[in-house]
Image 1 (cartoon, rainbow, N blue to C red):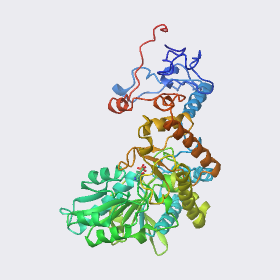
Image 2 (spheres, rainbow, N blue to C red):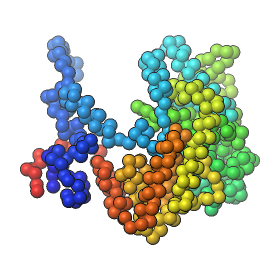
Image 3 (spheres, protein in one colour):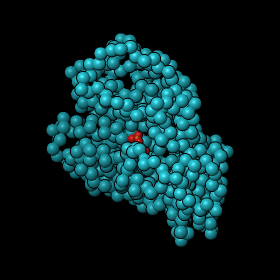
Image 4 (cartoon, rainbow, N blue to C red):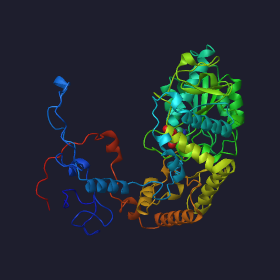
Length: 524
Ligand SMILES: Cc1ncc(COP(=O)(O)O)c(C=O)c1O
């Protein structure tokens, strides 16, 4: 059955179940076609004067006809984008429990500061003499990052966590090559519980990957690392707190074992939000660590462009930091843009980005740091851990914990043992959360836990918001163990789209809009 807009009615929904509306809309849930489907190239929201006659220099490259961009009036344009925005779940819509992603509130103060023209209008090709303030922001952010991590150097330019991993591993590769061991140290150790970007990064940089087994308690044992160490090992990539939400108890011993074997310790700092102000990675023996500013320092994920994933480096790796960087000498700072201009003792491995990194994110992160202060950032870490453990305690009698003996850090991890025999899977449970108005938690990650459900509330949530979330999950858990299977297996019932064929979407992605053939008169 097609609705008035010629679209199938809400997929798979029995007409008897929900009254189908004439428009296809359901009150505030408005169907919104693609702009190509509703726009017309002869329509425009603005009047533009015909250009004065001119002689085209494009020759045979000149456009032959209309390119058919869709046009809408201004009110139609506003409605289109506002409606689209309403289909999106964001941190401003509700609690966003995605574990490992740290979806914390993006403070409006940070947005306001980032929009100041002095920051938002600078151009990367401006002469540096015209942007001393921007350079000061970068220096100050670098100072905070080095202080919080206890590390002597930082490369600011990487644009995300995974990009930071690449930067850190390239610095390690350069350091190994400088010691003449480039041909022999070719192996990187990665725990089984690691985020997929870790082995992918190591492989991309040209290393081969050896997996470190996960202990039954979700942590990495120094004996297992030592058993894999040899003259062929370049580094370990270890996340701390790890992806099971546990602080690695043997991290100092693991770092020492790596150094003793002549190898390096790359720490995945995606979970730094749990320990800022409490522990400094530099004190734990870390050589390189990326920091996802969009997680720990509250910059928006995406953020209107690339994010920022600065990498802090130890004394041993600092000389290999990529250009560009700001060099301070005798109280004066200068931007080093090219390897040839690098100060003595510095041997940059190259560059990660065309320009200097994501200025908008630097400003937001620094605004977060300055507005919180040292005590505020420490409290944010404590509250993030408290909130995760509050959720864990609120659900532990109904849902099963794979690692009950370790306290959780900033995220609470459940497995699907408690769903055994119910006919409901982790995926069904996650989809039912959508009907309740929540974005699902991270599911099926980390891979070492069967049917994993990883919940990270962050420090931004109030007790009232956590209580409602816990009560909702308790209600769902009781229903899953009861008889109400359709609440799960057919969920989501109330989302604009029902359950998607994710395999088909991944294997046969439709990447280009094709003008559909005209719709025949509505079928019954
Ligand atoms: C543990 C871990 N490492 C690395 C990354 C990659 O970070 P990004 O998404 O910023 O590239 C993530 C992202 O969620 C992560 O959770």
